Image (tube, rainbow, N blue to C red):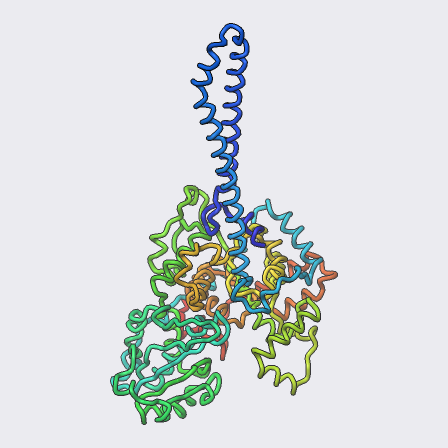
Length: 620
């Protein structure tokens, strides 16, 4: 897969530093052969002249040798040097190809040294829909030289979408602002969980929920802390990802936020005085009354409360509209990435798009001024215009695959492998399964409970109409099965790039071993993409990216959300369905997911900010 991607990769300098390598090598070889031909021609002519004069001018033989021996030696030395140089160049470029192929393999989940044993195993390619893949390949081949429909890259309901404007940062009356006297301090220790993406992305939700709780209880919020995870070994804290002072300043009129506890409270044993509250003390999706009843009395008594391992512990409804607005203001306005992340994120986006166009609101919000200062080095970038690219969050990591209990086409060996993983990582799930009725594999898939495979994701994109050469940014961590799972995808869409293939090792070095920073780069690349596609609408990364695009997209940020239940019904006919029928049904499924509607009761305000608390509607 790595080599395949390398061949189809744009030769401009956007990830693989091989641009012009083959041309340079061939030019050197032609030059070398030309030089050899010329020199041997000169020697042959000189030799003929010498032989004709052999009888009459024998005395000149030694004179000629003494005169030209240096030239002969020089020519042979030069030839030897050029042959050695030729050999070195071939060896060098071969090693570069292998290195770049290895980079893409690693980014897809084939890291040789530190990979989970379940993912390291190389397997033969698997195809669950061989017939549909052949139909898709034939369809893409026919469309390759036809004009691509511009509607693929546009919001289908642009005017309706553009009518909603961001306004969560609007000024509020003083009567709705913070109280003069605080009831105490709230500390939040956030835990992103086992999944790499959740380390950074879930924390974004937790921070804004904490802001709402602090406002509800009239408390001062201490900058949230991130609990260290033994799984990801990421020591990052708030200030390593987000701009602290900017965050405090944006929220200052509504919530007091400080960097740390006052010394007289910092020295207290919070567990001993009863100020430690865990997730066990609060129900999931807790209501404001739960906090008033459980947390407020402790806060008033001790002046401090520590919400340890704080997770998804604040529901979306019912909740006062002002608290909903605060959540939106926090998420969409107050959380800005630190300059280091913005700068590298700008490099990432620039190398996909060859950016030479007006900046979007999404670019400005996520990347600050860095997009202004970074320009493409390619001379033809302005003439060619910016590349459009699709970002895909392919949620097919082993934790997702194992937890789903679904079958993915490899038979008994795969089932045993996933069961072994569940027994180690999901013991509670194993216990629950012992006491519940088992559900068949076909029923799980029919209900839309199975994560989309890379093969299914590729079929959806082909069904929508994206061309074979479409540039696709792949977000996410390690794909279960690595190359063997991605083979079907890259056969249809070889122009697949990741942050590891777009950035140099030196540029990525400050991010290595910091999963939260790496996830932030994925968030930027997905949020600023021309089109964003997800395979799991319940994923935190996908939810927050789609919410950000809704809030700042202005009708120019389409998002593709496959309905897994409907897609399963379509794919169940894979042995008989015609390609035209497949295309029509997939397009209809996607279009229905793009309908413009106001946030429904109980739905995430981070994912669906289109509501009066977060956005203002203009009537055209």
